[in-house]
Amino acid sequence: MTGDDRGGEPRRPRSSTRRLLVVAATVLLTLVGAGGLAAARTGSFFAERPEGCAKPDRTMQLYAVELPKDGTQVRLGYGLTPQTASYPGPTIEMTEGECLAITVHNQVPAATLEQLRTDPAHPLGVSLHVHGVKYTQLSDGTVQSGSFVPPGESRTYTWFAQQRNKKTGAPGTAGHWWYHDHVVGGPHGTQGLGAGLFGGLVVRRPGDPKPDRTYTVVFGDRQSINLRRGAAADTCDAQQPQPGPTCLVARKGEKVEFIVVGIGNDMHTFHLHGHAWADNRTGVLPNGEPFADLVQAIDNKPLGPGDSFGVTVTAGDSVGPGHWMLHCHMQFHSDGGMSTMLHVLDENGNMPPGHDHSHPAGGTAAGATTGADTAAGQHQHK
Image (cartoon, rainbow, N blue to C red; front, side, top):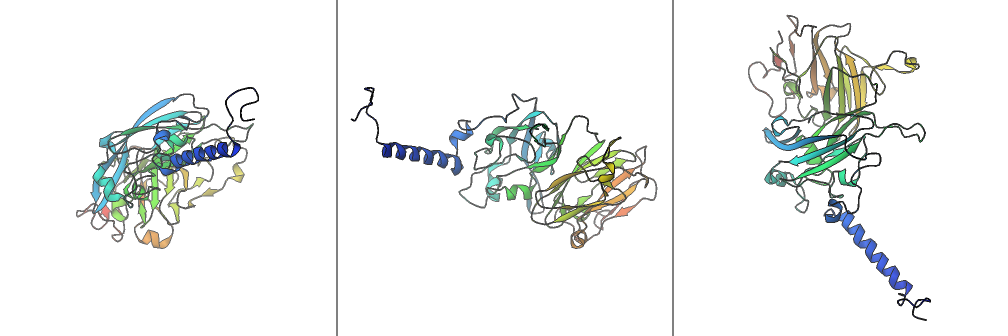
């Protein structure tokens, strides 16, 4: 009998049906894996938001722009506005349970992206890839998922800071993380990272202590801190130091939080003179901590590529104001200029007289600030 037992349409032979399924699966895998992903980019295959994120609690605009070159090195940065773009980009803060929608506007010229491309077949664009929090394929920030932003276009990425769940054992997402490009130059965004498309993310749990200041410190290849080294790593104004990627400053007694990130291929350690911190998730021990004796106080911590962790210290605690060195403790790295300063002012915001400081003149990266006061790696705070 060639028809259905109930008198319906003739049935296909099983081998024919199997071939159709194989062809359909092959087409689907080709679409998902090829990188073009027209269907995926319109959301045909993947959920727009992670489970637990019914709708965004907050929105943010983030701009990817080209910055002035560092010597011959192309520099790119993220910013909350095109005018405030920098490397590292702005520190993003979330609370567990929060859903954040970030719209990325790609204002990097196509010619610049073409210059950074390592494969002529690789598409031009930038992206936003995050560590630590939850997202779907549409917010993965890769060519493979089609979730990148071509030149002159915009795209919204949705992040969910999943809560800790004691019933299921889910650890939550509270911690110190980072975000970066995953597309510029090649499928892993290596040229985007090297140009400056990265920034810090901190996810807090309700009730976590909040710092007075937060800095993102990115240790990379060629003995760099935030892609700078030597005198270029610390450019605080002598009279009015303003917090920023190249100026780490705090008043005595302030809680200072560092989001420490490793990029590139080298191993490092993070060391801060005169200060120690609790080696736990927040860097501090809350009052009544039942396991306080099990938490070690440290002042040096290893850091590998892709790693991130948080450090919280009380600026100048028992040691007073001054210029406290922050550096990698691998000696040939620090000798090469992988060092900067945490400038601790007094309670009134002044640096006591006589607190001059200097940086090694060697190891200065291309594009370092020039002038009589910085050419030798020296400047003063009064």
